Length: 250
Length: 363
Ligand SMILES: Nc1ncnc2c1ncn2[C@@H]1O[C@H](COP(=O)(O)OP(=O)(O)OP(=O)(O)O)[C@@H](O)[C@H]1O
Ligand SMILES: [Mg+2]
Image (cartoon, rainbow over all chains, first blue to last red; front, side, top):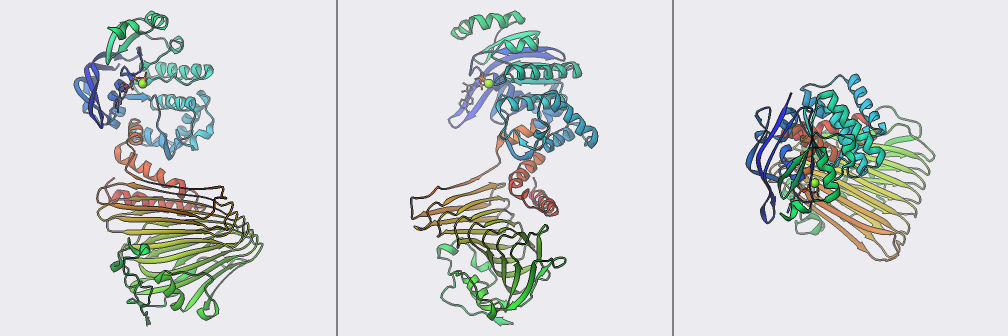
């Protein structure tokens, strides 16, 4: 049982023209097994929240705290956060030329587990994970994300989620760019990880469609750098119908 | 032993071709002050194969087939006592590379070495030249690619850090031929290579690729020169370098000339440099001169930068520590070129070398 606790988180982004304040006090608690959806207008700071938890160097935390089971996440290096059990499926996964998917995955799992997995079982695990996400086995030998289509990149993120077995996962617009079949396949992957690892999920999305597959326990409305409303799944339907006007104008 | 004489080509360091080179570190190769020792170090590895003839012939019997105004190359042409010949007959298809290496060395004198590689009509072969150990070497390699032939040419500079190596690899491509070269330079105090190409027949294709990795105090220079003097030839250049440590200096010059007769030319050259630390310097100068508008394409790109933070973040967010992430990125950076070297042992050795260079500089 794990708990990710975000308290009063304030974050600014470093730009050429100085720091710009983006997150203005975010409070959120995610426990193992729970699924939280975050919805909010473009530019409201959702990805900033995701990146800040993962430790992207572009962002500076200016206030508040993030803890995982009481441990100070903000004091950890990026790789230490992953070792502590955090995972971020990125909105725009990064291409790493010349580094094959299989080498990348083996290096990551070795770092996370502390020693190299047995080759035969690991190859089997990877094959099964690819197969489950309808990915061609040929992806193993391709460079990480290089030349992947938008949807292929997202499948690759969820494949990592299944293989690396984090405690808490943040999914930043994993549904964007997926066709209807891929949306179902990817959602099933997330649900498998939830069952297998009692995963806690923070799911950032613009659409209610994915919420039909991955049922949220809580829905949070994010606007102007913080959470402005919270509710159950019904809140998502209301947002789909009415938009964010009432939150943005205030 | 003989002492070289200076002549009008002797560089002063002000010439465009020499302005990046620290002349005082050339061990006298450029101005004739080096003492030459005829080591005959170039050696064929393994057995002689059918269709391949290797011999040494005295220099009077083998005139150079190309010109050069490089002081060291002209000296090698004038002074080397013999020429190492690799002759691949016409219609020969070699399943295994012809592998050459330097069996002896030393920095007590300079070896001047002339090499002639020729591949006959419609043949397919690879030639690998491995340079390792310690040496002062001035070298001129002429490569004649016959009509319809396909030659892969790999040179490895894995010298010790007191070595000095100045060489020209000059390829002449006859019609419908393909010449693919990969140049790897990771060792040496000063290495200055001139991979140059000219075309003697249409429809041919030259692909020059290379990687170099300079650490503290190393000067690694590659001056590509492609002379499109004939219609309908194609060339591609792709060199990648990494630098780390105080005084690490690399120079990449990409001169491509498209002469008025060279209609239908298609050329593109690319150089990327990765700066892994402060105190290192990468000079990169692509240069395209075009005398005809009737071409398919001509372009170049050159970039020099540091690690991509986004790539490192992505890898680290999966639990991979910083030093490991950097190693993956650098290996990946070079893999594009090294993975195309046919010999897996050489691939592994080079990747191992890159790892140890990285380890040395604390990544
Ligand atoms: N380098 C930067 N310079 C200026 N503004 C920046 C920079 N990086 C981020 N921002 C701003 O931070 C704000 C929050 O961006 P963020 O990516 O977190 O939004 P988001 O809620 O994820 O949006 P979307 O729904 O479009 O993905 C945006 O207004 C964005 O323009
Ligand atoms: Mg976003």
